[in-house]
Image (cartoon, rainbow, N blue to C red; front, side, top):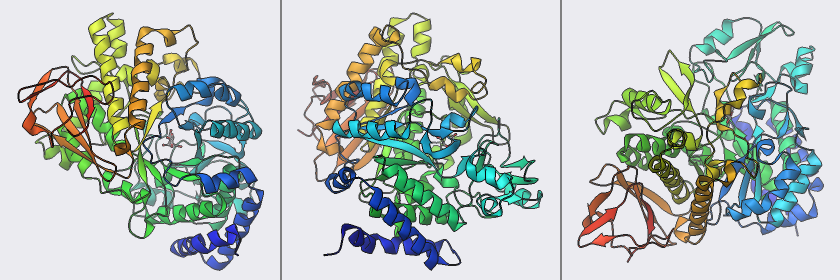
Amino acid sequence: MPSEFARRLASFGPDIRLGLDDLGFTDPDSVYASVIAIAERNYSERTKKLKARDLAQPADWFQSEKAVGYVAYTDRFAGDLNGVAKRIPYLKSLGITYLHLMPLLQPRPGENDGGYAVMNYREVNPAIGSMKDLAELTEKLHDNEITLTIDLVLNHVAREHEWAVRAENGDPKYQAYFYVYPDRVTPDEFEACLPEVFPDFAPGNFTWSEELHAWVWTTFNSYQWDVNWSNPEVLLEYLDIIGFLANQGVDCLRLDAIAFMWKRLGTSSQNLPEVHSITQILRAFARIVAPSLIFQAEAIVGPHDIGAYLGKGKYAGKVSDVAYHNSLMVQIWSALAARDSRLMEVALNRFEALPVGTTWTTYLRCHDDIGWAIDDSDASSLGWDGFGHRSFLANFYSGGFEGSFARGEVFQYNPETGDRRISGSTASLAGLEIAIHNQNQDQINEAIDRIVLGYTIVYGFGGLPLLYMGDELGLLNDHSYRENIEESGDNRWMHRPYFPQEDGPYSTSVAQELTQRLTLLATARKALPALHARQTTRVSSTSAPAVSFVTREGEFGQLLEIYNVSENNITLDLAELPYPIEPVDLITGHSVVVTGDALHIPAFAAFWVGPA
Ligand code: GLC
């Protein structure tokens, strides 16, 4: 009988081989041989316990209605990795089964883009623990049926990473790990088509290195050097890193900034097909070494490009397993500001059905800014001007719009495009900060309702929902970053708060109510197989612009979700429902009021109902 390794190699080796051909390497056979040698070594280093887990973990664990995620910075949430272990009971009380700890590998000293400038992939940030602590934490999480996701930054390393240091010291092997140009000719040619990710604090995509006496590609900050994936040595390095991290018991790697990994002159150097060929190789490698490991693509790209990250065409079933649903997040905030969810219908229904075995991670807020990814043609289908609506949202959420409930700030104003992205915590953007400032209980209640409504859409959409740490407590914008020299230039830190001390706002009635309602939501979700990711989702608007329906259909049954994004009570004719319903909200158990032919939908209603 062939060994488990041989069996998997026979199944997934061809994906690696084909991927190598796609990348156009000069000697794909020898690269393939190296890949297999790395796979064999990592497989032999994998513990028995993890090998058993590989066989036991159900293939759809991240698609299950039982899956609920939580995203937190280790230090801000719990001090260090051992502190996270102590908070497992807390996570369980919220119904969490999937924990994403924000970048935790050793970052460069000083400013490090929130940990996304990694200096050493094989060490944990010493401020929060060691690799041994990480492996121990994954075991404890597994014992409690929680999986662990960590970030793997594939597009760049810190300029203090050994590869970059060796490159700067003149080693040609390592210089070939990066994009290095002696003058501005090629950088300028590329720049003609490249967008700027951080136009404000890191303009341009290239940085002059005194040591190299050359320009180095740095898409993000000047201290984050893009690695050159067209060099097979880079691929081999990362495969070995993936094996190493998987062997610490990590269940999911969040592939950071994956869209940028391949560059081609005359293009935006984003979303190029080679990115998917690379992912196919990484994925096949993982399936051989550690098949319970999954990939979460961080590709904040347009609706036309995102599908490819979950595997379109020849990549179906071969790339990432989950991907951020950025549009859903944008559409929720857009609907809340406009009190109109019609754009949601247009924008969300245009997504193609996802490949079997994949799903979205759905979220209301994360550690990054919100970019107003509103499509011009979607907006014009409602008679709206895309630019105008994006401006409205930027004004609304940065507090520059008369009567806005939100308190956020502009992140990275781009004068060339007029884009204004937004920073701010869920609670502050949803109105809680202003409400508390005004000491207005009605406004406080509305803000809580808005947060719960947003999360109900997120938990009910049919992907893997992510609760962002602090949202369950209504944590407001935290301006303490301004006092910290390493953070003060980047206002995304305002929505990366610290988990409060037990006697702080943590115990306020707002925090208690939010925690209680979000916990109820998780419990309701887990009892509804209709929310398994294998089902399909459709959004439909109604005769009331503020009210929309989300329907879940498929082999596991029907679910109808009814959302009202406004502060008005609304009545709809029962005939608008797609089918007769059992008038009970499956989240709270409360009745949904029907009188005669009228369905009463209170302000900020978020109901889940089943068929009659
Ligand atoms: C991702 C991260 C973001 C970071 C960037 C560069 O988009 O989410 O926080 O700044 O990558 O690593």
